[in-house]
Image 1 (cartoon, chains in turn yellow, blue):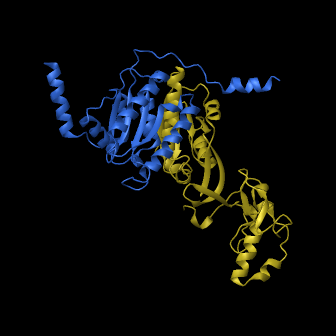
Image 2: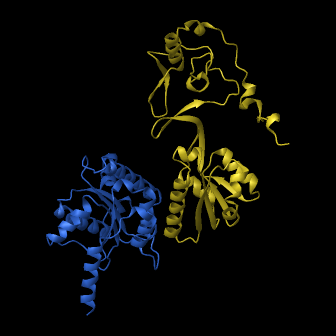
Image 3: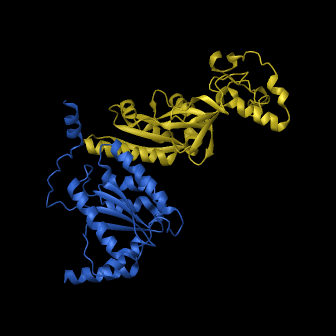
Length: 227
Length: 192
C-alpha cells in the first residue's frame, strides 16, 4: 500500500496560515490502513487545531471529513459540500489524493498534512517496510521475489557489493538499525530454490526512463475505455 | 569555569505558579467497570473522602478509550483527564489497560506539541479492592491540576463530562440506575 507520515504540527500550521474555515480531509484507503490519514486521524488533527485556536484566541472553524478514496473523482463528489464550505482543505491523503482534490475543487486551496513516503507492506502491526519503487520494469522474477531496487541501499542490479557482511548491509537505517543485505537475501532464497545459477546472470544497466526519471508516466487501457 | 554553573541553573526546578485557592478543576475520569469503578464504590462504602472535582465515565475496559476521546475532553474544557484501569497483567480483556497507557502517552505528546501541559492527562492502575488507592489517586491528581491551573481551552456553557460521554457514544456504559436514583434522592433531600 501507499504509506504516509503526518507532517510536524508547525509545518501544518504554516500551510494553513490565517485561513478561517479549515476542512481536514482524511482518506479511508491506504493512509487509513497505515494509521496516518484515515477518518480517525483527521478527527484527531481537527481537534488539535481547534484546541490550539481556542488556546491562542483565534477564531478558526475546523471540521473533518473523509473520502473513501481521495484519488477517484466519484468519491470526491461525496465530500464536495463540505469542501465548498471551507476556505482551505488540509488533506491527509497520499500525494495522489491531495492532487486529485486540488484538481477537482480548483481553485480551492488544498494543502498536505502528510508526507507520502513509500510503497510499503505492514511487516507487523504498526511497522511498515518499503517493498516497491514503482520503477516500471519489474525484475523480481530473476531475484527470488526480492526487490533490489528498493531493498538494496545502492539499488544494485548485480550485487552484492563489498559492503555486505554476514547478511547485513554496511548502511544502517536512520534509526541506526541494521538492514538486511538484499543480495544476501536473494542468494539465500535462490539457493533454497535450487536456482543458484540465476545469481551469475549479468544484468545490463537498468532502463530508468521507465521509472520517474523518464518524466510523468501515463497508462491507458484502450480495451477498457468507455465506449 | 562557568559551564557547570549553567548546568545547575538549567536543571533547577522552575518556580511553581501560586495556587489559586478558588480554582476548582473539572476532572474527567474514564474508569474501567471491572476495577476503578468498583474501587470508587468501595471508597464510598469505606466512607473515604476524596475531592468532588472528578466526574466519572464508566467503560467496559480502558482499552476502548481512544486518542480522540481524551482530546475531546480537553477540547471541551476539562482541566484534567485520567484513565483508571486494572493492574497491569490483570486486565479482564488481557491487554486493554496496556493499550490505554500507550494512547494516554500519545495524547501527552500531542498536548506537548500544542503547548498544553502533558501532566493534564494520566493513566492509573488499580484493582477493585483498592478503594483507598482510588481516593488517593483522585486527591493526588486534583492537587496536581490545582497546581497547573485552569485548562487554557475553556468554553462557556460546554460541559466536558457531557462532551466526553457524547464522544464515546455507545462505549460509555450507562450510569448505575440504583446509584442514579440514590443521587436523585439525596438531591431532593438537599432541595427540601
